[in-house]
Image 1 (cartoon, helix red, strand yellow):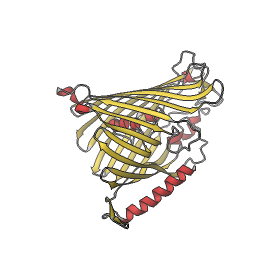
Image 2 (cartoon, helix red, strand yellow; image 1 turned 120 degrees about the horizontal axis):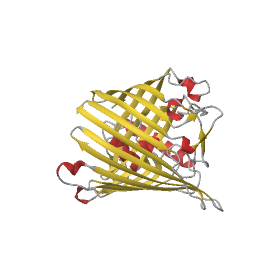
Image 3 (cartoon, helix red, strand yellow; image 1 turned 30 degrees about the horizontal axis):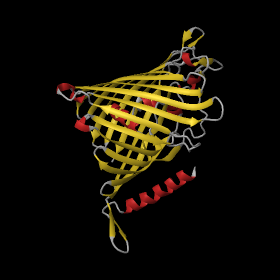
Length: 392
């Protein structure tokens, strides 16, 4: 753990204990000349506890996925506790701790998992930031904070117990990172904007170099009249420089994403897409990765939600046949080029709110691969999931 992380973690624990002690009212700090008041702490917690059955779709003994076929497993996802309090009239602090059971289901759907933490409950500091409200068109955050595009796209999707939004799930953007950001509303209620300057190493990875990442997001409601007023579009641009040693070598990532949301009655139709450009040399074209997602959600009743979603991921969009990028095959001792690693994910399910802080969700998930072995396409993987989500 880096020095910065140790300081943040120590501060987080100290603030949490102080806020827990003062939850019922205001904490008073006596100074020589005056008494300062901290606002009442607001504590929230949530967790999703799930179980999934992997259907016996794979029978080939050389297929790495065979060992998980026809198995029943459980998982913990999204477990967190957050404390938020006002420290001034226009400033607030938020501290969040998270826990998750790291498993093959979450980390490696190719069948191999050499992560030493697999199967363990791993806790981490997921957020620790200060927010300043200046004007409706300007708010500022500093610290370990949610990244703007992940927040926007996950809110539009709305069913994180089943899967995160496609651009987050497939690596176009991260959820949290350490840095500063500015965001606010556009005039005439036309949308909003956000800029972030962060480490670029994700929230759970230490900073390894002096390079950083920049994020820019613009969301619009461009048709402010009639039935079209609720249509929303958004775009995102990311520039992340990870390493730039002497010579032609470079480690840089540039990404772009777009989102379209069309509400019609109690339905919501949406499309999200993202492009990732990986630069490994200054004199070579980048490897292009594409992610596309389409989904329909419906709320026929206030406590019942339905969803249907399809994702497509191509890890190499270049015209070189994917020969420069080799991926792990699902078949043992088989070499797989990137162009042969296209995959399709489909989700279908429902969520029922039992009470305000308790919901029960169920969904089916299937993944198809454009991979062939001995002239035949490999079979898809499929799982059935039941998830209980708790919060207060």
